[in-house]
Image 1 (cartoon, rainbow, N blue to C red):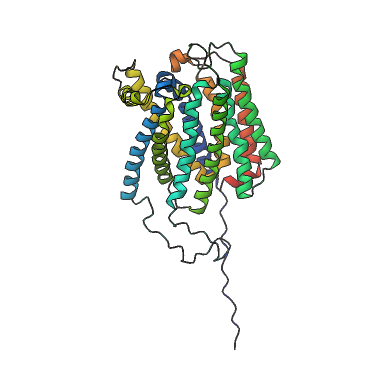
Image 2: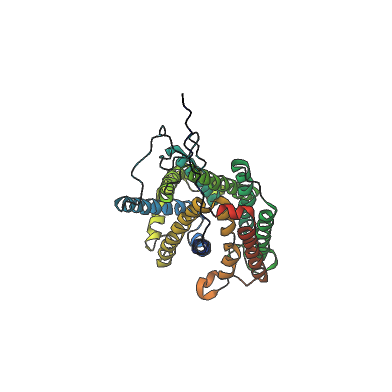
Length: 385
């Protein structure tokens, strides 16, 4: 009996990221920052125009628009053969990068639908909590609490992916959080007339509203990390597919939670008035003079839809390519930039806020933190896979 030498499976080496790919990475992150700034500024104007009574309608209306657009995009991608048409059966052996058969990734496996539903539930719950709590949460809290997403995501990535934050990564995150905190101090140190920036009377602050707004960040952090896990296990999953499932789930969840707006703290709208409120919202989106709406309502609504759609989609794409940690770190750059844009009267008109010196300092700190994280930390290098 002769012994044969086993066939050696060559290891697959990942190519080093070329300079052109690095440039495309910087371009993608820059585009996300620009879209996030536009999204934040338009959201300030949109939720001021569409008052508390229509705040939940805005969530439902935008979700419906995104569902229609994403379905059209998926059909176009399918016709253009941009979506994988073949699904590999889970019983077929596939060799991974280490030459192992057991536990190998099968990039063309079809993602279970309930994974996408879970993502939609996390996103929809966060959006609902923010929508009902925003009218009674002070501006300082609305600015600071989203920064909780950075340490939350880093900790969740550590627990789920066993990627412990490095010293450079923690330093970069700390600089970004510090920059965001400095920018948020405008509501304490600056002489703006109100938290909303619109010159109206101060909002009525409730402790439960601040708690709900903060808890929404926990849902968003879990969502981003779970999205990274799904993209990691199903590498051929198109972000537009996840986007569409997320919005459909969020839309259905929104209808289930909509009756909560009948509670006094959430708007105090009676059940019998909800159809009229919805109809008023629809008419506002097309500029009809209903409930004090006009052409500006339609313009801002559709501009917000266009920017927010691509902002969310690009965020998913970046999570797929670079991980959840890089996505939240990059998005944080938009905070001081958004504050600076809100100081430009030619752009935002009556929603202009007073210039605050802290925004410039915040921008320096946030950019420094991003450079430390992106260029020098182990996480930043690993995320650029």
